[in-house]
Image (cartoon, rainbow, N blue to C red; front, side):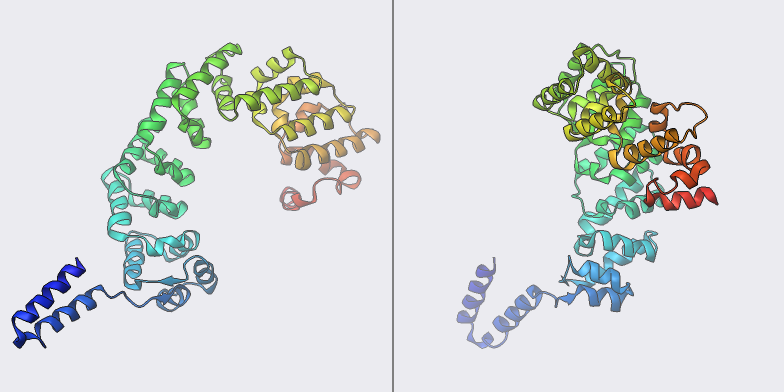
Length: 381
């Protein structure tokens, strides 16, 4: 296009030499003026001098975005966000977390998203909370599936408030066409008898599980049926999630590991039915925890079989310090009655501290994980 314009200007100058010093030069000047870029400005200086951002934020941002090519457009972005109800404090947090917002396209990307939320009935406070919690909403691609995905979420959870609750934690979901990925999977699960409430609860915590290919979920439904888990049981969905989290080779490898640790085939089946998610943890953790419990002399393999959820807890932060505390208390005959090992392991840190540490602080206070000092101080207060 530029070559065409230049040729036209040359032709015009040859036809009319009286305009040689006027028309061609003036048009060329306009051409180059209109296409010349704005002067870049250092992002750190811009944020501090023009918008009073803190030096710490400016430094963090400049490590990602060193220069701003169009500072006036960035001014418009920041002004729009402020006018939309985002406070200066949250604005600074947004830019610090997602510096690319400074160079986003206001008219094609940011404004249309606010309009979609507004047209779908979200309150201004809802939108501000979502954007402040998950600023990547401002930089993710915008197309027709953006609004469709929000509607898809709403069709599952029921209200804009619930949608905003999910997006405040999982805004990355808007990168997907949920109407084509998530909805078919949810319909399949509902057809298996899984309740809407259970699906919604899982969606809040593990939304990625609903983005697998429908064929894979259907295949894993069949595998769970073959394991003998009742479709009305809450474990049915957990079992599907467990299978979806690993390949068939991973599954076979874990079966061999459990057998090597002393599990029979019936033990494995029983543990899986009790708590399928235990089979989704790493082989290293399964081995380390099982060996720790067996070597403690306090339990045998049946204890692990009957309490498979223990396999999901931390070896370092839960089992080792609690085992040591119980050992000391038992060796000094400080426990009025023999403690239930399963209960001692499953209770929260706060309850364990109140029951087994606080009454015997002179004997075991220093054995409990030191990093829980804030919790200890809170309880003592």
